[in-house]
Every structure is written in structure tokens, then in C-alpha cells.
Length: 129
Length: 502
Image (cartoon, rainbow over all chains, first blue to last red; front, top):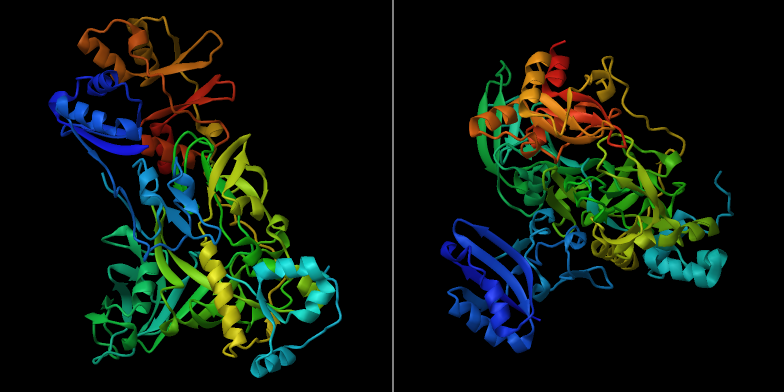
């Protein structure tokens, strides 16, 4: 799956943009994380690699920004003590233990739920959206 | 009763082997396999020393520093380092930096543990002192930047470290809670544990045959000592602890780290490794302990009481696997202690012994095996339970009119009407404010103004818990219900505050 980041302005808030995109492209879209406030809305979605181009174009045609998203999950490994406090809070498999009990972090799986951010006792985790 | 084994080796013989460079050392992880393969008798002949390790948040830690005298001198009354108050337990210029003391300006994000880390790292910290001023110590104020090189002594002095084992934690409430066991999601959605299992120092010598006052240990990257049993040492229940000291000037931030647990506070991660000399086959057997053999309780930290309910027994093999089962569901479990660091410490200690840099010491006095740890003496005026303070609830039915409810509010002189069904089971709550607002907005149906998501209390919880719930949800009353949702009464903020002025 490819992770895309969608942003739309407050004026678009009541328009069913995501529904239009799904209908027009026939793509299955998995919404990983979404939020909305007075500055507009943001959404992190997963789409099949074969649909990426169509989905990006469709969102843009409806006036939303849509781009591939990398670098959401940032861990300062110089600070990390491998305590694993974050591990049990991850709803997906973005934080895993290696056999030697070091942690390994997968940015591409992160859903930006931010559950792990405030649990890190040495403040090594930053979730950027 | 500790089984007596014939002594195979002495401390002197072990240290002689270290000196000669033919000592046989393994980590506690490796020892598990060796004992399984050779049996305890043969393993005891083969192996001289087993190294252990742990790296966890150890709140009862701190450091003593001696500043030397200023000119003119000052007899410190209060002191702060980087806005964290540090205590002044002794004569003029000795201070104790407690790991859990929090900054007055950054509170939860910076505390005593971070100061200790910063000093070890060689960073400059700001020291601020106040004093009353005496004939012999005239100064009343002083402010200066210092590093560890400006201190005469900088001694890590931890009064409770390295718990033999610790309860595992989960949370059965419907709200995420932040604890010293980390962030625990609602409805048993995750769990956490502490301690390194098979590598845990005291689990490898559970009868304290080789650990006590004077045992030389790996502490924070240098050599330190056990100086007796730790506070809350509870050997009969398998919750032994140690008190330790070591020269923090020689320590490394690889093994000592300041930390903060969100909404709980600051603490210190401490790296400790204890070498266990294999003096007899009994110690070989004990150090061969497997993660499966070390058991602890899975406890519901959602219940804010001293005696929290135990869900079940878990062993460290389950805990270290990353997932455990709670009520038939598999959930992820966080270690909190760094298992990777624990292993690194055991390896490092092994290397130091092999290189002839670390010698073992026989304790002058072993840790006690028969002391008891008791809870605090009960207060004279104990905080009452909900059942002692609650009042009868004034109730109404869902199909009553707003007018009827308004009448009840006035007649009974209350602010909260509990909505129940025919069996007096809780349906919702209506406040006098809800009724006033309904009138103002022209709302005529009671059903539309009932608050259906109600926070409740149970009759057997402490009023202290109710006070915290009222405060954290910013509400003024809780219906008291039994396990069938039947309404037993109501407890209001007024009832709680009245207790204080009684």
C-alpha cells in the first residue's frame, strides 16, 4: 500500500470529496487518520499502488492537496533507550522488537495516531503531519 | 529454607582466577542453556561467575553533592538546580538531588533525574541558593553556574533499586490512564511490565547468598557498591530491593538517563549489573533460572487503591514475547525496562571481569531474608468510603415532564435528578442547569435533555477517588450504583467538600 496525505480547505469541509474520489477512481481507500478544525482538514490514507496516480489526480481535481507522504514517524535513535514503552501503544506494526530487544521503527506503517509520542520517557519520538 | 551445598570455590579463588586471566564468566542468559545442558553440579564446576543486568526507571534514586564553601560562606536553607528544588539534608553545603523532584518551570518535562544526567554529561547547570544568614555563615543568596568538575563529591546514592521482580500493569477502566507503569489504554488494550526476567540481578540470587553490604557491582557505567537492602525490601514475597552507591563523576550517560513519564513525573533510568559468584551447585541452579520460572501478577492499575485487583499470574517468558492474553484477547505488552540495555550491561560486566578490571567482593552483611514490609499506619481520621457519605438519590422516570422534574428540584432542594427505569436502574442524569436551559430554549421534552453518558461511583470506593473523578471530569455529582446498575444513592461535590470542614 502507498500512503498519501490529503489536505483540504475549510470551504471543502462539507463536500464528500473522498466519496467522489472513490466513486470516480474505483480505488479502495483506507483512512488511517483524519482530523478537521477551523484551518481545514487533513487525512492520511492508504491506497493500492496501482491507484496512486488516479487518486492523487482525483483529489486535486476536487480542490484538495494530495501527495505521497514520508517521514511522519521520526525517532531520534541517539536518545532512544529501547525501553519499548511505545511498543504496546502502536495500533499497527510500526514499532517492533528485534531478537536482541532493540526496537525497529517503520515509518511507512505509521498511521500518525500519536499514541506513542507522549509515552516516550526520553522524548525521542516525533510524529509529523 | 535455603539448601546447604558444599562450597566449591571461595571469593579469593575466583579473584585469583580473574587475576590470572582464566576466569570463566557467562551472562545469566547464557547460564540458562548451560545449566540445561550440563546440570547444576557440572555447571558449577565449569562456570565461576554469572553476570546479570537491568536498566529501568528507578524512582528512589538520587545523588549527593558537596559544593565546598563559598567566601563568605553560606549555610544553605533552600537550593535549586535548573529550577528543580534539591533538598538540603545535612550541614552547610551538602545537597541531595532527588530523581523525582520536578522543575518549577518545566514541571513534568524536567526533574532531578535530568540534572543527574546533565551533570554526568559534563553540562553546566545553574545552582541557586538561599539562606537565613548567621554570624558564622553570613551569606543569604548565591547564584552560580557549575559542572561536575566544580563538585567535591558527586555520589549516586539510591535507596531503592533493582526490584527482584515487579507487578505487570494493565487498565480495565474506560479511560486511558498515565501511571508510573507508563500509558495504559482503556479496556485492557495494552499492558506493561518492568524488570529483565532471567537477567534480573536479584532473581538470580533469590536467597541473597552473595548479595549484601559491600557487594561490588556495575553501576551506571562504573563500579559501585550495594550498601544494604533497599527501602521496601520485601524478601518473603520475592520483592527484594537494594540500596546502592557509586561515584557519579565516573558514570556514563549510556547507563544513567533522566526520564519523564507523562502526567506522572520525572525519574531516573539506572543501569545495574551484579556478578554472582558460583560458589556451589545451588547457585548454579539458581542462576540457571528461566524466564518461564519467574512469575508475577498482572494487576489492574485502573483501580486507584493500594491493593489493586490481580487479573492473573504471568511469567516473564510471556511478558518478553511482546504479547500476552487478557480475558481471551491478545494484547501488546511494553517492557519499560530496556531489555537490550540489560543484556548490554551483563555483557559489559562479563567483559570487565574477563579483562581483569573487575574483582568480586564478599558482602560484609547479606541482605535480610526475613524482614516484613507493611503499609502505612492508618490515619486516625481515615478517608471515608462512598457508602458512608452518599445520600438518597432523588429520581425521576424518562417519561416525566420537565415541569415535574423542576418541581422535584425545588421541593427537595437538590441540583441533580437521577433518571431511572422501572427497576430503578440508571438511565441518565438531569441537573438544575439542564432544566433551566431547557426552559430558556423552549425545550419541552425531558427525553431530549437527559445526559445519558453518566460517570458513576461504587459504594465501596474511597471518597478520595470520587474527589479526583469529580475534578478530572469537571462535574458536580456521581450517582452511586451497584454492579447491576441499580441506583443506590448519589454523592455530590458538596458532600465531599463538607468532609473537609467538619
